[in-house]
Length: 132
Image (cartoon, rainbow, N blue to C red):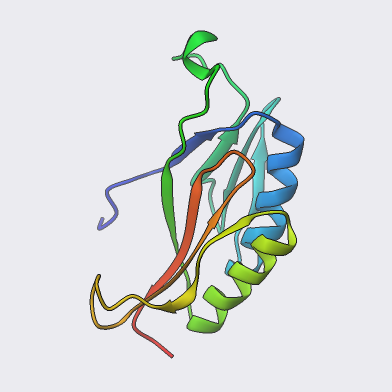
């Protein structure tokens, strides 16, 4: 086993809006909605790894989710073209540009990524470490 994370959950203010955004933005990466429970949905390729939910969740109070605190999530892409397609799809789905697709040599020589802010301000990235 090489992964250290099994899944990540992001709180959203409007589940229907977020579900539509993520379905469209993540499609170029081969990521789709795999499971739903009420106002919570799990996205992934083969199992739910990225969850979005309108809170509070069982471990939160209403006060804790009154303000969404944006987080950063980087999703693995298979190619630079997939990174480019993710960025375009995310913008078309209503995301805001936070870093156009391109090399990020400040991270390492073969890092290629794109960044988009979702409707709640979460910084969603698609990245490939190498490839063409």
